[in-house]
Each structure stands twice: as C-alpha cells, then as structure tokens.
Length: 117
Image 1 (tube, one colour):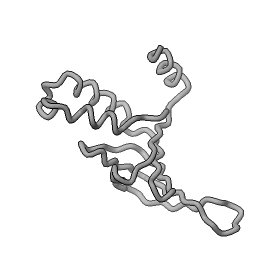
Image 2: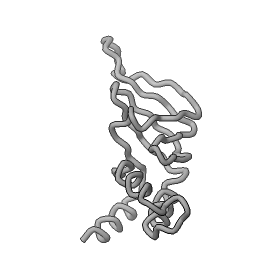
Image 3: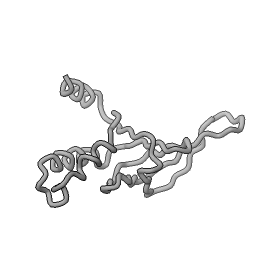
Image 4: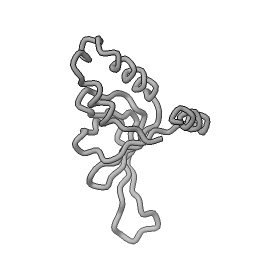
C-alpha cells in the first residue's frame, strides 16, 4: 500500500493542530498509529531503499525505522544486483525520501478499495 506521508504532514500542520483542536489532526494521528510497527519500504533520492519497522514520524516528515536493512544497487557484475546491510535504528529525512510503501494484507487492501468507492 502506498501512503502519502507528505499530504498527511501538510494537513497536520493546519492552524490549531498543535493543541489538538483541529478535528482533522485526530484523524491523521489515528491513521499514523495504524502504521506503527508495520514493515515499511522507503526509497531515497540516491536510489537506495530501506526496509524496517515503522517507529515514528515527526511534524517535518522525518521517518524513523527500527531493525532497518539498506538495499542498494551494485554496478558490478555479481550474481545479486542488490547489496544489503543491517543498520538497526535509522532516521530518514523527508528531504531525501522519494517513496514510502507499507506492508499490509490483502484483506486490508480490499477494505481500502471499498473505502475509496
């Protein structure tokens, strides 16, 4: 499932959202809470990808992943075109991020499709 983190963050910075008086902010918080501890794949501008458990996001859109693994393309002629290394807890700045995908079940995907109709 693709998620639009930028849209969520822009909406959460509306006037009144810092004190919880914006009704839209509570909806956004509950949507982000549903992402907690799910596997998330984040792509960044230099072509690398990070796969880890979603831990948190701040108002600026920076994402923290737990138990993250970095995947990067190798230009050498090796059997595996991707190298990987374990990183642990990492922060991915919003300025570097190009994509963000969350792992979810088929049932959740179908329920989201019904919701959009």
